[in-house]
Length: 249
Ligand SMILES: [Zn+2]
Image (cartoon, rainbow, N blue to C red; front, side, top):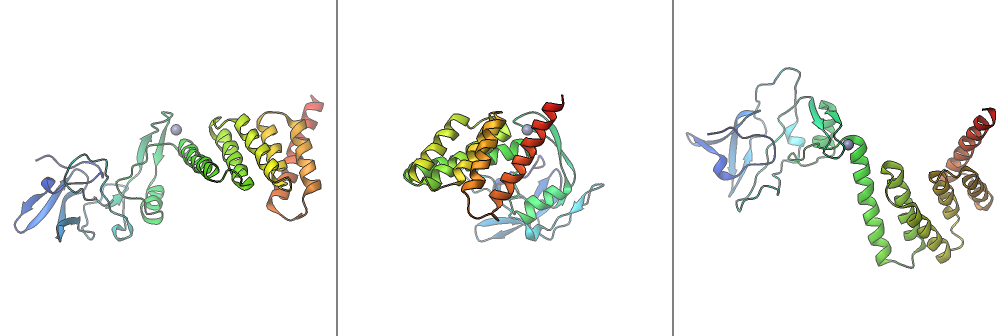
């Protein structure tokens, strides 16, 4: 019988009997003892396979051990723990760059964030961030659809569009501008819109217009201690110093 590979999960027919016990033969972990609970199966969490060089033992009790639904079978699928972590090389499925899935990252993923153990790292950190931003944008767009007269919903969509644009040059700056216009039409008092217009002009490489929006935001806003005010001052300082650089050339 071939040894099981990876962490996607196992089905009952993958198991072998060894006396009264069941085992799952695994290419990384050897013979994993498997316990039957009711009709289901679970890999023993206190099993201690031999550690490869430079690997560290994982805390299996802290993991969310689940099989992936991507396994196409009519049988129930059971999870395989991550018994140890060792530095892994990955190749990003989106952009093709190679990177490391480090021991520390794995510990964080499976024990702190408690991602299911079948989840594999398959994107680099840039692509992962862009992917998450894309998901947040989709949620914002759906929210606007359900709440078309909510100015804050439109503002949120604009912010998410600006975020995805920053990360991956997608998201649509024209659409972001349309969202900001809609937000300020629905609520002319919403001064945050002016700040985000400034950000948008910066993305469009229009520093003078951006500066104008930032300054007008500072004039209109009353809460001078808000985070946005601090950001605005920082952005103004940055744009001004760029302007000075240009004059020096
Ligand atoms: Zn990538």
